[in-house]
Amino acid sequence: MEGQLVRYEIRIEGHLSETLAKAFPELGHVVMSGQTILFGPVVDEAHLYGLLTRCQSLGLRVMEMRQLPE
Image 1: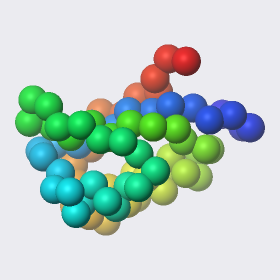
Image 2: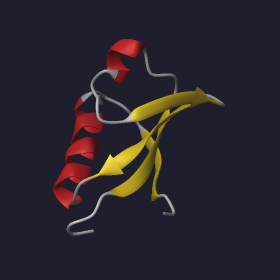
Image 3: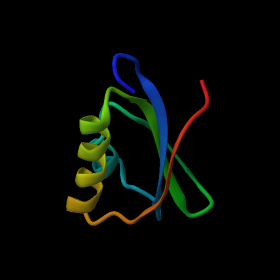
């Protein structure tokens, strides 16, 4: 993951309000089937762990996280 942006998708349980979605300005989001999907480039592992920590601190339940194909 070093030196290149890798795209990730993080599925959150429930519908994120616009206010909560703004806590992730670097990611796009879409709501579907009772989940909110955050997606976008992740710089490195520290950024990825930071996103997950942000989810946890906001009380969001991460259902799934995956790296997207190039």
